[in-house]
Length: 88
Image (cartoon, rainbow, N blue to C red):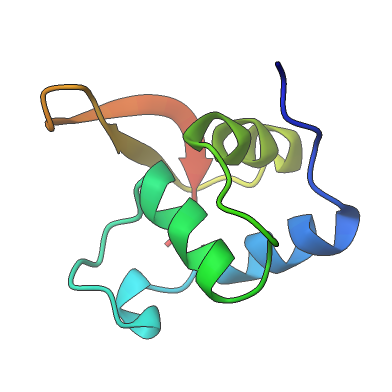
């Protein structure tokens, strides 16, 4: 099943959240991953439940904000690049 798109207000909050460092939100890294973006959105009340990495990726594509490519952890726990664009 495909997750519904985020509400416009959540998209706007996500767009303002991602240009900041994850360290701003108490995270030990300065690099956004799709999973980390989903977790911080949930923790900050942007979303009512934890989004999937795919939902974050598709939302960022829809917003079409230029910036650094996001990364996600594959099943082996290694980071790999995705086509999602995330600002820092």
